[in-house]
Image 1 (cartoon, rainbow, N blue to C red):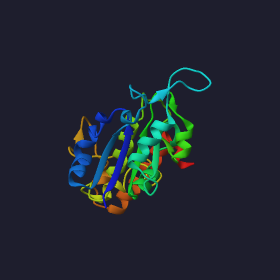
Image 2 (cartoon, helix red, strand yellow):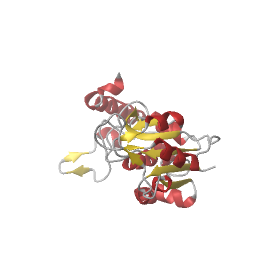
Image 3 (cartoon, helix red, strand yellow):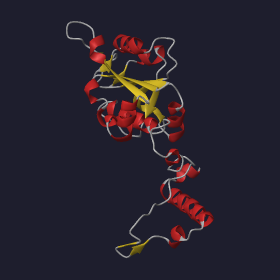
Image 4 (cartoon, helix red, strand yellow):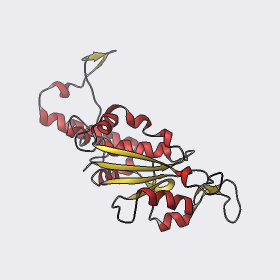
Length: 226
């Protein structure tokens, strides 16, 4: 069974976007995964299909309505749907490779793209939305974050990458940043490929790569070592 993604968004024309190209695009054409962009506006209320309203208690901006969002979610994810329901939000759990692998191993995901000041909390509670953040910054909407999330997932699906090992030997998979890479030419502007990499000794190569990964992680992301 292929991985099935449904994205609830005010801008369905943003999908598949870059996901229609390269590895993800070829996998989409091959049926390894599917994507359904659900236009939130069609569930809006009134003549103007309103999807938001002023925040209770006052304040700047607008808030996505609970009833509108719930109707959109229910249209593609009924109660029996086993897929997790995610809300792209700067206050959510920070996305990491472990969570990406968990999602890639499942049947798919429903992804809600937040907009404006946020989403009515009652919709989050009533539809069991798990809030997910791609970093400590704020975007104009959840669509770019959803694209990032799906790209991270799709590349791990069986049959997407030509060499399955490519997804196993990279940053975060072992809790470390990835070691440096080199290729031809042997010499570039006076800089040589480290001799150990051309020694033919696979044991030494693996030790060197591990040492380099640990050193890079210690220098750039010591929090990962903690």
